[in-house]
Length: 138
Image (cartoon, rainbow, N blue to C red):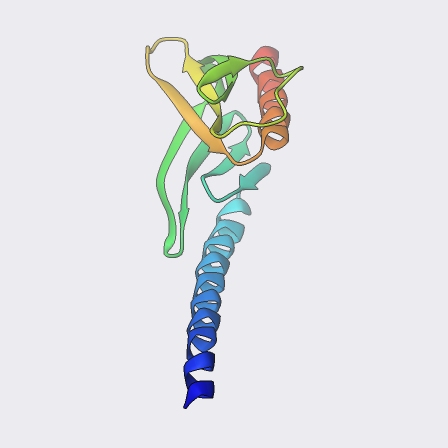
């Protein structure tokens, strides 16, 4: 009886971890299929991002697929900024740590902007530099 009470929580934890892994696998698999259409794509727990020619598409990954997909053209972007903890930072000298990280896209003819979240500063910097080079070249 005592052994059963000891193993029951471990069994519950095992099944919970297996369920969590299954959910994450479904997200990654949906992203993998979606990303095939892009020249360059990224996945993390906060957002997916895809670049095809001059178009950027981004959204949120879920186990049932990608949701809230939005697309915009880099031709309409006037500025790309890296935000760390809601402060604009330089792409060349980013901080080492931050709680909220994202790339903000400001548009030419609109006061609205798009903020694509990232989990890691180096990944956001890499994407920021790459996309800025595309904006400048057009």
